[in-house]
Amino acid sequence: MRGAGTAIDRKKIIKCSNNLEIEQKLNWSDQFTGDKLHAFFRMYRLLSCMKMLKSIAVIAALLSPLAQANLITNGSFEDNTVAKGNWSWFTAAQVNGWEGSNIEIWNNFGGVNAYDGNQFIELNAHGNNNGAWSIYQPFATVVGQRYQLSFVYRARASATEQFSVSVANLLQTINNSDKKNWTMFSGSFIAQSTTSVLTFTSLTNGTIGNFIDNVSVEGLRTPQLQSVPTGPLAPLMVLAAGLLWWRRRSA
Image 1 (cartoon, rainbow, N blue to C red):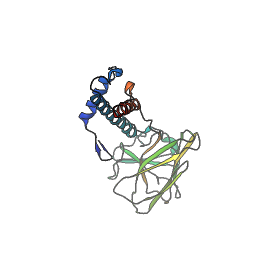
Image 2: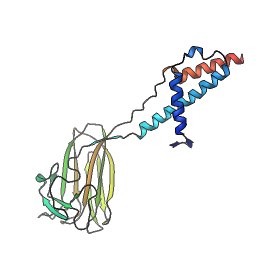
Image 3: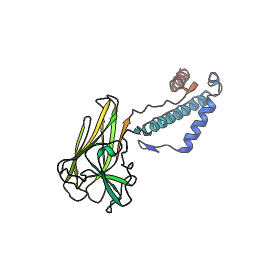
Image 4: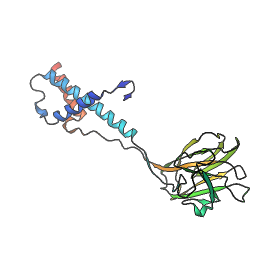
């Protein structure tokens, strides 16, 4: 692990941890007896250990998972049964979690493999609608909390396929042109109500285009930095004691 150009050696971490454990058992009132210079540098080394361990705790907190459980139901469209290598269309009422227009679900059909699981949807679904297609899903949110939206998309037949995605204060138009690869979308929004609504709407007409898969909304939390237990080795106490000894020695 490296940070700001400084290497943190695993052996040093273990040694520091062991030293702190030993020193916490000692009587610090005896530390300035005997070889005072040795005692001072001993405390200096321990203070350096404290700084190292505290830095590790900060890094660990920052790298800890910030996301929570997915709030979207059936985000990979796996709940409906579609034969392998085939496709089928459903009314929105037949698809768990989703509402709106018809929903066309593919199961690794036509040489297109799902990004997550085995199934995905074509937003421009089969049916009599020749205008815009739109599906949506309401989900519970906390007003003022920040959330992360992510999903993947892919064009089917045209380099000019388009759709929009909206939720709370997030509105994005997707120019869907890659027919060979899934593209990841990720964006954050702040909930403005106790119920937020995620909506996908086609901007190209017809019944062909706009594959979508792996839809997810997760609440984000601010990482809480964990302090390192210091006991009698509080850095300020150690530093103050060392400075006091140095002042007396210099007097």
